[in-house]
Image (tube, rainbow, N blue to C red; front, side, top):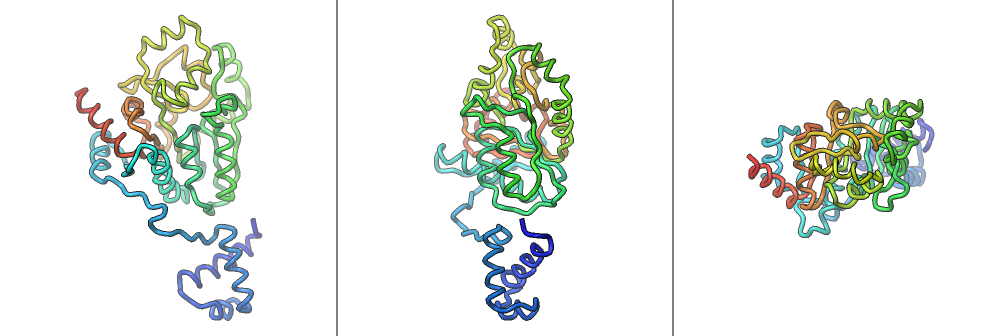
Amino acid sequence: MPAKRDQQLLIDAARMYYVEGLDQGQVGRRLGLSRSGVSRILAKARELGVVQVRIIGDEHVSRNRDLERALVRKFGLREALVAETSSESASLRAVGQLASQVFTRRSATATRIGLSWGFTVGQLVEAIPQVTLRSATKLTPLVGGMPLLDTGPSGNSYIQTLAEKCGVSAERFDAPAVVESAATFHAMMSESTVRGALARARDCDLAFVGIGSFGVQTSKQTVDAMHLTEAEWSEVLRAKPVGDLAGRLFDIEGNPLGPPASERVIGTDIDEIREMQIATGLAAGKEKAPGVLGALRTGAFDILVVDEALAATVLSMATARE
């Protein structure tokens, strides 16, 4: 990152040239620089992401406003973003792009931003452009890392990637997301480093959480990593889980599951996510519908970002259960 004074020079020159419409000679006269000096500064501004060139239509995601309004009315959301997509394969990327718009709009005023892990959160991080956040802003994982799961990348790695894009500090959660016994869970929760990471996660005023559907993709990998005994597995199944938020299982009515599953996850719980100022839920693919419906019924989310096939399926399921 350039020094603060140099950063301001990049911003001033870019504003005059791209926003005010001055030519390089006029910018130079205002700033006391030569035309070639202004050219070098503008090139540096593009290189560092102070200026971002975006081609309209290349990354544009159309939105289904009718489904958005229906979700807001049905579930009392502050906001819903529903991506119109031509195929299921495009849904994940489209949801990530719409979620990046939420990040861009909301992050400027946030003090601590939390992320869970999973495919959709990974797409969000990839879609976020280089943005300059306030230096005091912190990025923090909401749950420990999952280095053993190829399909469930560690939240710590996402946080570091995003921090580099935004020029801010990345906090760590140095603990596994999932442990194999209740004894290990209680031992981990007594560690000061884990308690500190959980306190930072609870302090987030903006959060992005992938919604898992039980038995699908990362949610399946999470439960497999718990190494439940046959008796414990039967107990979990009797509770009829439909999805998870950062590894925390819940049923179709949005009720969080207790032990044994709750004593395997090192991270924020559903009640703590609900208490955050702005919590955004992300999911793609209509197979996630049971998990998304249950997640919405937890009341944890203020904002939902999904694709239209998933949104329509969730609304249909909700109506059918009334």
